[in-house]
Image (cartoon, rainbow, N blue to C red):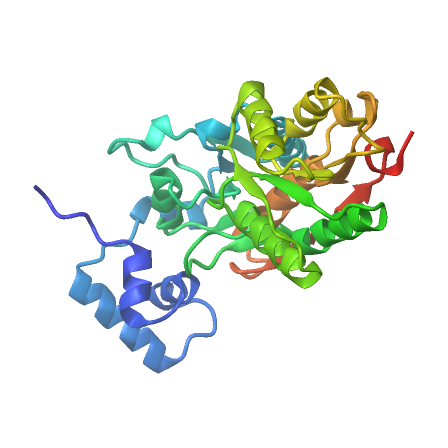
Length: 330
């Protein structure tokens, strides 16, 4: 079996520098010291690294196309679809084309698409396609951070602040035992959400209750999770719902169980959607501004490609809590 070809990430690890620094050193770009340049070149020689000549030609004469990678499990989630729509709108304004990179497209040994740069939406820690894309010698922007020590351009929101605001609000409304229906900790967002919920519970001296369901789960899975919590902890008086679309299911199960949402049990969502504003009762949620997120990702990537922003630049995404009857009462 042939050995996997060395990537720019391998070179960076061997030289003890970031991917961006390794790339700059091999190109003679950026502010790289002579010692670092020598170390990177030596690492590349030891590993037999061969630069991606296609990628280099793209820098000199761009294709005018960027790629967006969205794992198949996330194509059923409205939040990510809205993010893609926002990206497409911004791409049109910036006069660049967009190629959607599917997991199936790169599952084998197919070459990566000819693009000037790539956007990864909430990269999954266990997604081999995301890992392969992150290793390419191309400008990359991620919505929330990639796992590991890969340096990319990042668009990120203050999820910790929003979740704490929600939990403090639930407590102010009388909740003493909030449960968390969580997405798995395989994305930056999913991990941060579980960390801040657990920390908040410790500070309040509350026993945390976390039940996970995979990304893209159906309504039956969220209903089962709600019943699981109620059976294990009948005293649960609030639900913090992570997965997009789960809050409506949780509210339905609670009402079927004779609980009054907004009064004796509170429900809040970490991902807002138009449906949450019109359900009965309307559900308090964090507006994650998905279209703005997609637009900011494209805007940042285009600026990096054009040399107007650093390859590891970070851009904040403003988000806010929308308070509704599910936590305020009828």
